[in-house]
Amino acid sequence: MSLRPSSTRAEVRKKSYKTGVDADEAWRRREDNLVEIRKNKREDNLLKKRREGLQGLPSQPMQQLLDASQNAAALEKRVFD
Image 1 (cartoon, rainbow, N blue to C red):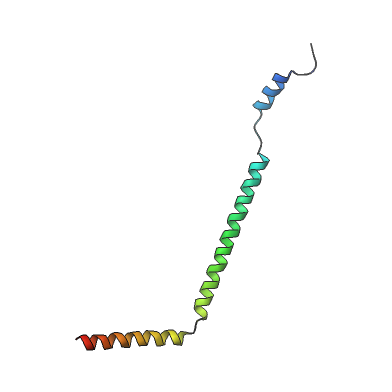
Image 2: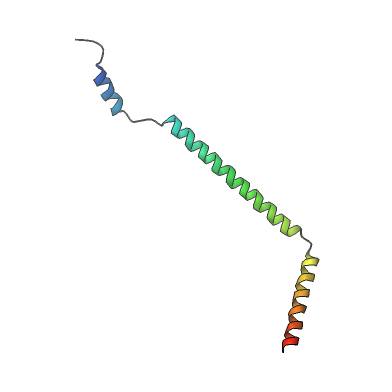
């Protein structure tokens, strides 16, 4: 009778315990989450810059373009009517 547990008994005991978190899998998940967070933050920053860029445009040239296109449409209507 040996005081050491047999290798099969030790393996059975190991398998009966709840398996822990796999270190590699946990690392991969954390990396994926960090990449996703970085992508979202970058996209948010780009959207913010685009919105600021649109607000910073001078409104007069846009208004002049709208007026010109309306005038052109009115002239076309007169010509073809």
